[in-house]
Image (cartoon, rainbow, N blue to C red; front, side, top):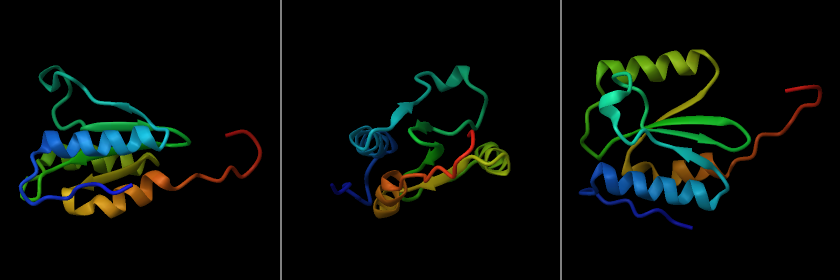
Length: 108
């Protein structure tokens, strides 16, 4: 599987590519459909399979707001895998979403 990485891809197109890849790899995906009713800066996608991944998606030239950076930093400090992905990160997206977390025993 290969994601299409284009310089002029819109954020909506990029998100569709990431969601399609995630679902193909067995992830359940969540995206707030009306971000005007969400907390400002909350990441674009929450992906759940064997772990929780949150991702802020941007175009090749899109800027990250201070609120978006704050949420990514807070979630990361709480142990959540957080990413800022642009279309040229397509190979990283596939690598992250293909990785399986190994259980270490006990109760998790």
